[in-house]
Length: 287
Ligand code: SF4
Image 1 (cartoon, rainbow, N blue to C red):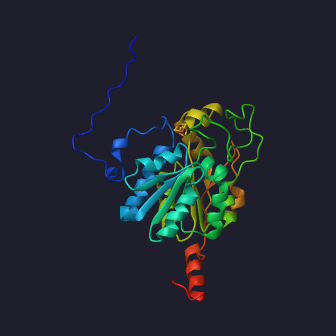
Image 2: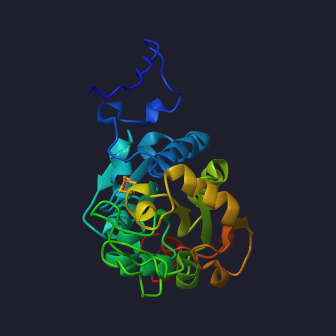
């Protein structure tokens, strides 16, 4: 028996979404599953860009591998989809070669904190002028739902079918401890706050970091009986507590318990490029 589907409404001929100018529409439809949080992240990044009003030629977006790593491919900007875990080295090269560029890294928890973890902590330590937007869905979604560095204790994944027994990273605490000058966390339920956090991170000097907690209903949600993407948003509504300025150590995530979101760190300190210029001047070299 044929499956009945609802007719897809036709777009008004010539009508455009105001954010379409930032999209490579020839790449749409996107690859993400129904209920995934990545569309919300992409949409809010476009609104953040629009609010900033930067010349698109002054922005470069870099990603590693994974479902999140597909975001830059949909952007009508200079974008780089790099090798696994190496988004930050590519971004570092771009920033050093052209310090006027606004360089943003958008990637997932596995890419940035497992194989790319060492790059991340050293970029934060140097306070290099980069913004890192990390979408955390607690597993490696693209490759089938394996456990990663943020999988909570007892979390079910394809590689931890009886429950994860490795302690997860608290990304807020880790980046703050490594030296980031701006650290925030939001969920995909907090669209406007997430967008505002992106704007703040992209305009704050130094290494800035925004963690975005997002549903992966296909892999993490299904295995952990969280339900569909909408059910996970309901979970955020019930469990996320906004606490600006909280101690990053308190930002650990334990399933079923309240967790903190908000702006944790906002510090003013010299960046890598400022320190480099000062040292070069001290040595009598070019500024
Ligand atoms: Fe999103 Fe998970 Fe599907 Fe990847 S596997 S597109 S993270 S829902």
